[in-house]
Image (cartoon, rainbow, N blue to C red; front, side, top):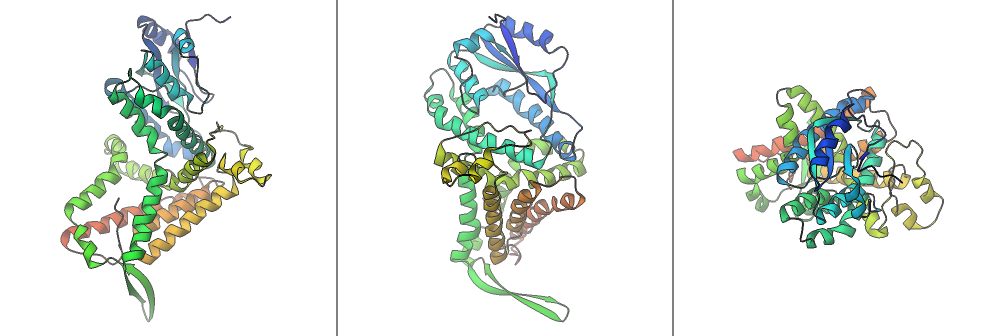
Length: 408
């Protein structure tokens, strides 16, 4: 029978420092109410081009978010690179049998009076997913796992008497972010496509090139809506769009070219995940099932099950990104946004449509291919251009090639 008072949880692609145990064991032993110590992480700076391009984001995330939680919020056990107290683990009944077992465990021990801490000076090394496919597989696991966590544990968390409201909100805000993508995606469709087509003014835009001209039927903003284009409305737009990127801007402002490059690549990956996230949330709502998908598994079989059965629930139980159904739904979203962008001449919306299609294409392609590297800049470029044109409204101008704008 194992009787050691502490044990370590590590991922297969993780590298622990040589002095991991010698430095963390005295710390957890000194405080009997400390249930675990979560170590810091940095990204391994080699591997595929995708890993090299995106590893900076991991470093910034760990450096900015976790130390703040140590002081003001709830320290989460993140499933790897941590030392745990065995007696605390046994008292909580081990890890709950859900995909997000690490977060559920941290809440379970907090309810019993224990807590976790973050060791910023103990740095482990980890990898970013090696391919876009692996990145998407991980996102499906995270999204459906978060839905499962909120479905099964949100009520208990809110009703807890031992967890402060500051800690509760620090847990709920980031975990609700992924499931809320469904509502945000529907909101985008309603405000950026349905609303313009419903109340917009039909017009013809003529594009002349030399001796030729092209007449395009479009939907323009009615005069009654132009009252919205004031400096405060535009400022709220910029704040809403820039707030998730603020830590990256503050961390990389001294190297603006690297910052812009990182933001462009992040847009092609993260901003284009909305259709996939929506599919995952709908899948969990239909089946109440979440599966632990292995990010590095090159031959997953979850999507094959759906292809062998006529039952619709089989697909919705996994919504695996390898599935042709998932990819067709992403393409459908891309076409819907593309048609909406063309009808109302919304440049930023056009960038999103390209991003949705591009992410589906990159699922089975090499991120390092020169053609894809060039295309990866397109969504970011169109979105920034659309937002910039919206700024002309501050000077009393309403550009034709802006339509309803990119305002949320």
